[in-house]
Image 1 (cartoon, rainbow, N blue to C red):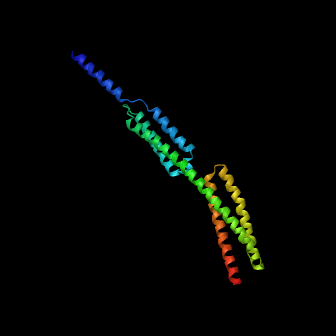
Image 2 (cartoon, rainbow, N blue to C red):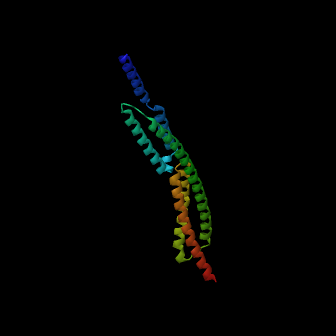
Image 3 (cartoon, rainbow, N blue to C red):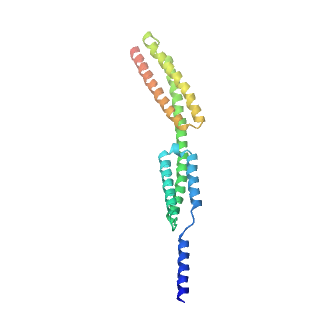
Length: 199
């Protein structure tokens, strides 16, 4: 009777041991990996780099924890499963943020190019009215060359935009706007001086 009781306790004990050994959370691991890859495919590493880097670090940490739990005699992945699921959800948010940031930058690039086009038109009109005397001739020729250069680079920006290189397109568009604005300020100064002399 005593032997039967002891063997019964042993069986129950073994059952508890096996119950505590959870199955490797392959589905959760795969889902987290896939979600992070989807975020990368959405160019999160470019448009929300800090968020993506934090996400990647989080995934690496939880995968390391899963492997550590796997090496234990009594395997329990409860905490790791929670973290894997959280990583999957975070990855979806990061991907959405990347898409939103990209669209924002596209709109900003388009608006900046429109401003550059307006400045180019204004600058050309002002250049045509600028004095053509010996002193100002060289300066006006330099400005004319700068305006031609800006027009050429606007085409480059449009090509980058079309090839989905939005970050570089925007940076170049901003630089062109700054240059065109500087020329506008210079021409405005020249024209104001001419008007002053006429008075």
